View 1 (spheres, one colour):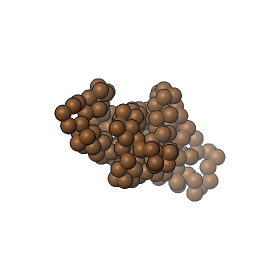
View 2 (cartoon, rainbow, N blue to C red):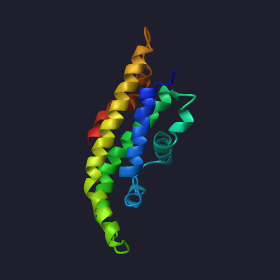
View 3 (cartoon, helix red, strand yellow):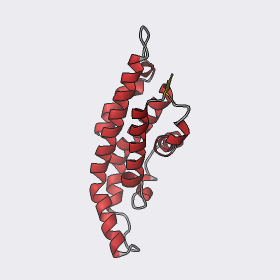
View 4 (cartoon, helix red, strand yellow):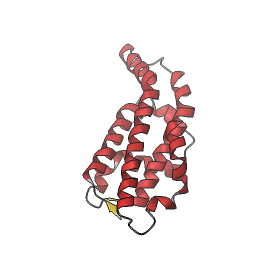
Length: 158
């Protein structure tokens, strides 16, 4: 089944915008690149955050969307555990005074911005499950085929 709901598109676009602006920016990219995530997960994160226009006409397949949500949840979990520390001790020697202020703002708000991202991903997941259940009368919804979704709350909360 394909999801073509404007509300879902809007939620995904908001996640992508927040990710690019507040999570993966020039001050954090170095620390984030060190996260222990496989290439498939990074590709799925890119699909979710940067390629939503590709899905505008064809829609998202449910199983694909669950995988994108799981990838982002794994990212959030890894970023909480690994990136926050390395951000604090990153090099600031070559930055201008204005860039140092911006970097400090990014570092100081990184944890809060991860929480906002986690909340947005959770809302998207709840909406997708709702759509999945509505479109699965008399049969098992698609999310049942993804046992890792049982870990979603742990990934998002920390």
